Length: 101
Image 1 (tube, one colour):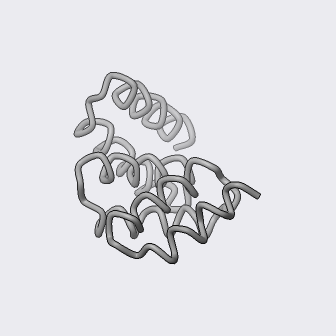
Image 2 (spheres, rainbow, N blue to C red):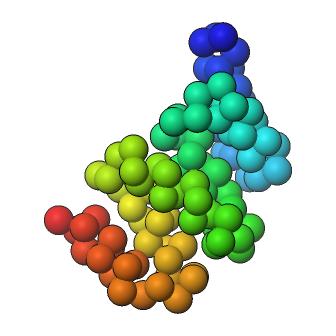
């Protein structure tokens, strides 16, 4: 199972690097079926949905990633950007400030 998970994660990263968001999303989603708390998969799905202008869906994944690691800079940045898209400015500013500290 671990080999399959690592393979899926690596393949998803390659698709994301190639800007193939649909395939990357599908593979990261499969990763979450195996390991629901995978920070990388949660963060990358959040990023993909943010790129696809789906901030409401993005929020779920980035909130979960943030709950796993509040200090991950990429998660903080994407989470704050998502909140900005949702016009939750006060919460976004709090996260941007946390990123700076």
